[in-house]
Image 1 (tube, rainbow, N blue to C red):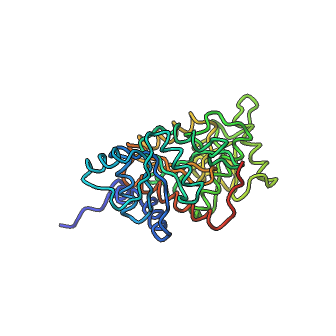
Image 2 (cartoon, rainbow, N blue to C red):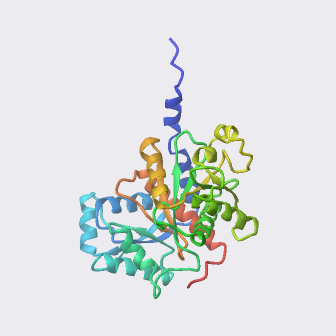
Image 3 (cartoon, rainbow, N blue to C red):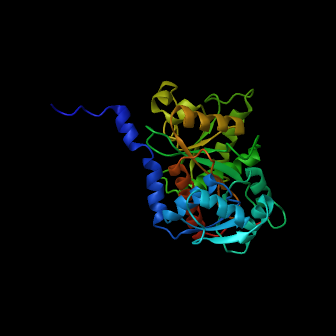
Length: 325
């Protein structure tokens, strides 16, 4: 009796995370990322640190109340003896101290621990002593969608609530720079809307057209832009063909720029919960990459977030940093 042929579902299950695994493999070939971890005072945030350090991705500096961090490590059956620990009495002080470590050159990335994202970002965007640059700060998900050939960058689904056209120029440029750091082969940016034609009644279509023309004029560089595009004709050749869209982006976009945070959040979570995708998160536009992990993240997602930051930091080492403001 011969073995049954593998089903499509089983083949896809075997290939799940392959895109993340490639990212992690490349990042492991780079120097360990010196990362300041702000307030890792629970098991979820500390386990992410242990995992990334154990894989050789990061050299962490743990910033927070030492007694609480050691207690959390003990609950995991671990200790902090091999890590550099910097005392900070509370979460706000931990965020400010972690940012200061970056400014002094002792760390080249930030990582969120068990504090609220807003608390960490408040320390990052401070006019005095923060990590602002001339570029607007934005968030990118790097998504590993089972059954989809390439990783997808989705932006912005976490920081900019209702970005203006001016904001979107930086959001798009941040995403393109990230795609270069991740060594994408061809960067094809779809500016998403609910339709693929410009409609004066739908502002996102007008902004999409403007962004594409700005790219034509060199105001956005490093990628090919097209839009407005609906999601289906951005990622599916068949849908683009039915709509008779001729474009170097349609059907093969690997960067998806959403109209606003609500649309991006729903898109990312739809892929996560309905398509079994994983979503590594990174904040860009500051002096260093900022790793945002969630307690609900899988191990591979946490590692992928660190790998993404490592690749971004490596790209920044080879070019001039963004100017401060």
